[in-house]
Length: 599
Image (cartoon, rainbow, N blue to C red; front, side):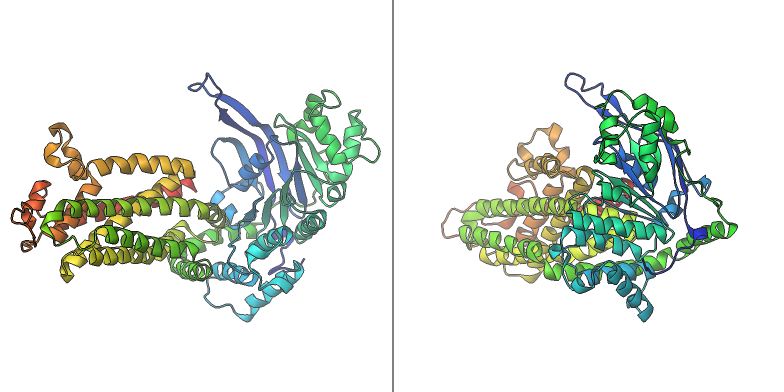
């Protein structure tokens, strides 16, 4: 398998893990406050050596993916045990730069072509905005080897399952990783596509890499394509670690004989499930829970050279020195990628832009030209209150729905060292800001004109500014909640629990003067109250002249009386704007910190 740079034996990576355990809490009815511990992995050990392909197999729930997640460094919480890389304790920061993880589900950008996906991956890898001839040749060779050249201009959304899987592998080869992890790479593929993927994995191992996979259902033909098997029992223990060609001899040594024309992989899983008697303890003892090397071929040279160690240290130092310059480069590439995707998938953007305009037209038709009529001041205030409430909920829910859809892909790309969290977060903020401002600005323009608010430029600017700040704050709230929970149902519940109380303490439906004194302090910290007060002052404040009134008795002709009626006569527009901006900045910082912690 040709790739961008050959990997020599001295450059490979050997992985050794010892006494790895993993357990999870299981809540059962009647024991809500006393969850039971379920052991997924029980003190398993083993080695994954370079130049070999490994298949981790076992029945569902045996801990295949859990072991892969720990060895790859994708997850570390809740695990016990140690991992050595080339005989030395693993440094996760260094290891992640030399490995890649391809998940079971192909997380690809659906609106990028194969060639565009490869080029963007290469730009992020080499820190360039334009690829040179050498880098283009690398991409061409990889696509040829993976038989993707003919479809290089096809969008990822239009590819078959096997083509998506091969594209996922090809994109990671741009980084030339020394270790590659695959979570069930053949699941969901037909036999022909699965055979191609497994053949690719075998060729990658021959090029000097360490290839580690979990396989849910292994066929007899696939069994011979993997060098070493690592088999887990339903109890999370290793019952075999050795050459795939020695599996039947291993079983025979314990008195188990695979029936003729029966798939050995299926047979050993059936044995582990107890279909032929209770052999689990014997198998675990014979394999020494993964520590036994009796059925593995001895490797001639497993030592790491001093040159490799120095190269490893140099990689870390170089990365630290270039971190600031990489940030701006990654940001530029991610912004261009986002713009390209948005130009092809504009449905969500169009909805965010035009849905507020449609709602503003509906509000404007119902409350047409009441802004300068003293008889309808109460209706006008109610209109403004409902409009700001609409912007609050729209902004919060739109982000809480959008972000979880991109989170899994972002998490995998960041884990595989495509870019830093800081670059992604900055790109997300920069690219979403114009959309949020434009949609809210259009809403304000249509509403302001149709409802007949005073035609004064400075009032419209202040009016729009307060709406935009409120929308941005609500959007930041929705994003933070989306990161914390990542479930659409939980997001909706938590957002409602946070935002609904603010609508009560906005000073409109429940006036400040009518509120019990023990609750009046809530108005001082209520985001919606500050927003409503700022909007009312942009319309009725700043020494506005008396409004028109067709009747003789008109108690709300004076704008100041309107503000006084809602206990908002004090003009604190800029204080409210600064307060909302301050909360917005704090939420953005908290969101970044939570996102960094989650990853």
